Length: 457
Image (cartoon, rainbow, N blue to C red; front, side, top):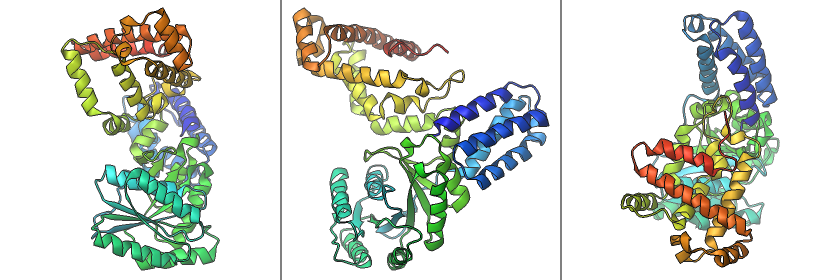
């Protein structure tokens, strides 16, 4: 997300960062570029005009002229205004109501509403430690009820059965009664996809809202529809008292216009971003972190949170103890590291959150991510084709064993040889890692592990 915008803005702002003095002329040129970059990202025109006017007002004032580094002060203004445009901070769900707290999900057909209900249920269960019930009030699509039942089973939350012969209000009320009896904290109510222009369907969801009085009414919208996402959110907001927006399919949207327009047009905060198909692919929306990523500064806080959620601490502690005892880093350990990286969204997911170095975002180097991901998959396949004894002691892998492993993993004998060589490099790195100053040495060594090494910047 924001790939195109990040490239354009980073390039534009780099021209002013190093300037000792900013004049109205070079601010004007830069703002013209910023304006074009935002319009190309499909940000709504009134939002762009307002943003540029606010940046200009602050930039030509004393804030920049009194700064020792005017160029950097200008970039800070752009960052602050981006944050303000999207909402100053993450707005959490209001769950401090008497249980069960009811969350109503509304949205257009095909926006990914039912999938989002499953993702949100998992988020509430795992990160908020809440007991969750999900129910479908979509009486027009039997497949939606079945889909939600499957998702509930996958994420381990309570599913309340419903039927197409029932009325949406009756379904939701029965689910809430059941949740009270079972002392469930949160009830997520999925609804049928509808168009804002469909007055009959809009009247139905208004009735449902009035009957169940949800603490949150979230509008689920496809980010790839750009500024149309903000316009449909506004139309829904006129019919329903929305409390927030969930942007879905964000991973497929390189422009980011929806994220930048929604708050300004609707006045409602973006609460979550749907980043993929998997049930864990739902992230709370942090305007400050998103602004930082747009300007090529990375999102290290989200990276740390991702690591805390996905890394197996028990395995990490076990490995640290093993290394401290002087025992080697074997191929079982190597495979564990590859699998944990995969759990964190793969190499691309990690590198996209890293800051640009010398104006280059490591996550966007053409072909680098794909080649690395492919190599990591191949490594895992080779290790899986080995016997437990071979994983523990690669020294015993002879020529005939290499041929057997290559055949079992669908690779070449030289690929197996290369993996064993790379593993030896990793072993040396791990020894240094346990010694003083090991982290810096380990990061340098990791560059050599990637196809072609890390790029020269």
